[in-house]
Length: 491
Image (tube, rainbow, N blue to C red; front, side, top):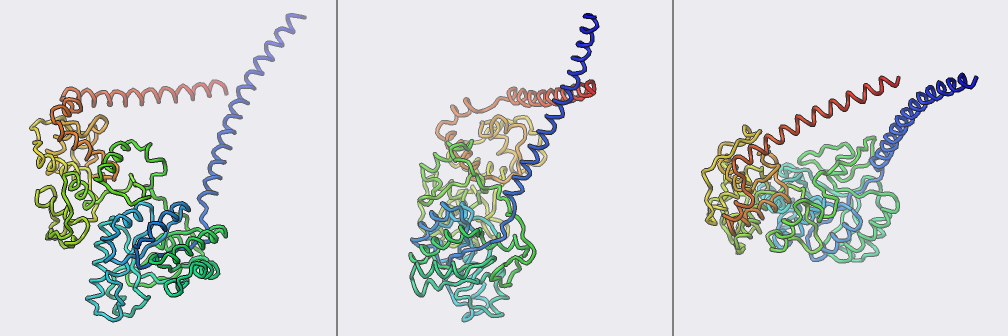
């Protein structure tokens, strides 16, 4: 009897273990499902588009009050649209760069604040396009919108502006009364979903009143976006020469566009932080007081030329003739571009432009840097390292420069398997490579000994990566097979 009981207990325990195993697996699966559901629900809640949008815009600046305004907007994570007078761009170039880096929209308000209904079509085009050049130099090639001074326009004006025209639906007449309390009260009482608010950052009372109004409207559940974002989220595709004054919700309310160029972590955590900080300290890259460095935004050809020129000790004289149609002689970046062209570091485009607002690829950057090294007395070696796995996409004119930088250790370690020749260069990457080049100039032999790679090392590195890839794939397959077999044996 005791033996029978013992056998029954053993059988019971065996059955119970099976039940426990199945229950355990079921609980784990349920928890994973609920966890994913919770994450999905949270994401859905976070990404749910706001149904109360406003676009606040600032005209006629920048001015000395724009610095304060940008600080206040950054504290509140509010994005605005700045309609800039082109003739003020050189004086406040750092402010416009900051606007771009912090996610605001940069737009044109003519070069001389000209009332466009009083001039010819040719003058309209000149006022608009000249401003575009200055703004593109500061912030890259972005969607370009225009606001006519005074809101004055006719058919001639519209047909000669090759950009969307932005008007407004809320006007506190801040320029007229210069009263912060009045500005605040008017904006708060008049604002409704989809409105475009007009303010001027030329006046202290205007920016103060606007910020107070922003605080109240945020408490009321409004979200502030750029004009570009407002039109996008309301399903509007802006057309050149067409006027837009508001964008209320008429059934289309899209979620916000993601900006992959925004680096949300502290800058000190960025892998190229040391290089960024070094060039900031050396004034090779400058920031407006209170401004942020946007490491993942693309560097433009104009910015890159400016950084190399500063590194080389070029002093701006604000009267540089580059011969490029997109580089006015008094443009902030003109002396650096003139230096770069004279020393054959850069080339003009076939159409006679410099391409000041164009982004640059990795192969372009490496070519510019090797030309700069030659200018500073560091000649390229004839050494031919092993080819990259993506060698076929490297342009013929860049291969010699790329080979040298690979040999010298300017391109290092994990970068030696694939080069990504056509990848757009970010600001952080530009800082890192400029710092590497500056190091090799100081002591070429030492730098190459410490960072350069011999042919055998490169081959070993490539083969090691291939072996690890094969090993990982094989191990992953075995692990998956083992898991499936274990689950099958349980059931």
